[in-house]
Image (cartoon, rainbow, N blue to C red; front, side):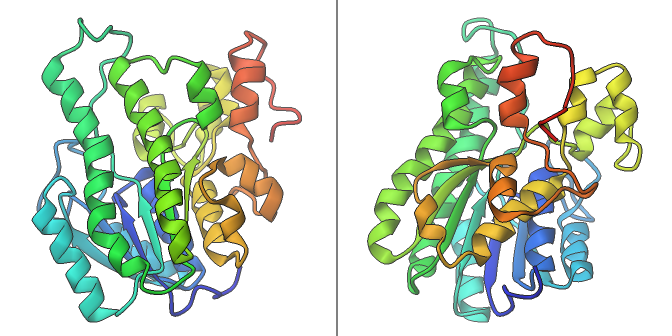
Length: 302
């Protein structure tokens, strides 16, 4: 996609690892200056206690051809988010792309709301919802100073899928549906300013934590298919990253305003591929194959 985002400034909130890291790197590959935020640095870890750091992500952005700027920010603390936006305004003067990918929550799967730890559940909602609202509150005044801005709310599951399926936890279900709705609301508020908001979901993500859970690496991820057959539809973080980069480079991106999108769907429209050259379409595959109880077979879906 060349360097068509050269001169553009992006904030990827929650870029330490996973989808956020993939998005930051692919925006960098398109030439953007990317602020990468998170709570884990080379000197301090977040409650997730993972080794990935924002400094590593920023370095990967640089290697891809962009300019990565790490900034340790707790997006639950309004003063820290406000200070970050003030810094972006002072140093760059503009903000063209905001990606709200903040997460980092502990999930109690397969427990009802009354069986769940209330403190854990409410903290999940704060990490998934409050952080996005706080970041939008402070960042959007800068983004709308020029027309053409883009806001991407990263979630899990399309609006259509989440509306019809229980997502395995009361708090997780509520969190992911809320993010889809936030994009819908932002679309209405941003439209008069010539900006666009969408929600975007990757498929079954080959995140660092997921690869660790399956005992595989980015290089040999297919080995996990032996014990998790439907993992065959999984995708790298670069895939959703390329989806965001394609949206950011699309002069007609306003046509997507308020919509719930998936990486696989956008790959068909924009023509990008995953790292292996395929186009996995998880949100067609999951209901049609996995949820339907059919044997794992990605033919026609990858």
